[in-house]
Amino acid sequence: MEPIMQNTKPGIVTLCGSTKFKQQFKEAEANLTLQGKIVLSLGFFEQSDHVKVTEEQVKLFGWLHFHKIDLSDEILVINVNGYIGESTRKEIEYAHRAGKKVSYLEPVG
Image (cartoon, rainbow, N blue to C red):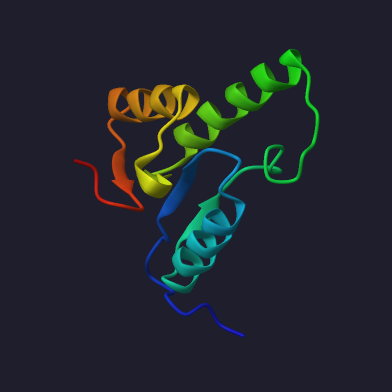
């Protein structure tokens, strides 16, 4: 089977937001994939799935997520009901400094 868009490179989007919004992440991932984008997301959802993680693991996840942003053309912030936590704010700032496009699932006011 031949690729749909042979002469173009798909955009890469990293999803950023709280791990308590698993359903919204999955929906965004599906929608972006249907638009022909490569989606980088979270490895797992410790808050939604009630998984205990160590402080060292939290640092590792943050480090990995910044590298996902580096690989991306843009980020999509999963800001359900306007919620943007401290880690996500840092990711948004990082993306801006790196010249990445920043979009939001819900309008920001």
